Length: 120
Image (tube, rainbow, N blue to C red; front, side, top):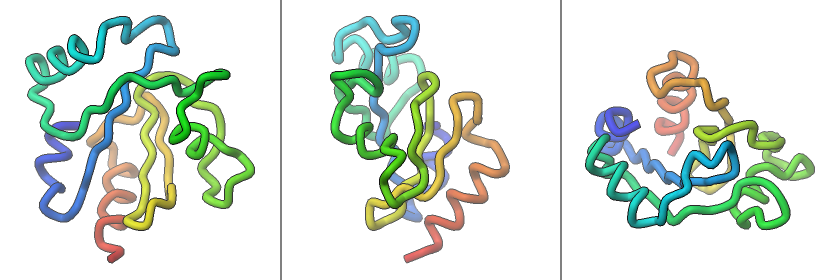
């Protein structure tokens, strides 16, 4: 994700990362530990927020909005695992989602990203 960010941030790309510990306890650390790991191991420079819940009764408001199947954005549905990706337009409307196994260099992902960045 960092290389994607470096390649497209000049065109307006913002990556907002929200660690979550909802799946197999993949993020058990503190916010400081997670930030240290991401910056020291992957040189992350994009926005890394505090840990949130993406499913369940304590789901954070952002993910409640993103996963809402009744919302008019058409991208709702349960988060299946960490690394779910949502592409949100410049006005804040989710326009695409990509599953956890979709890599940042996936052709379909890049195509959607480039189209979204071109839409001003």
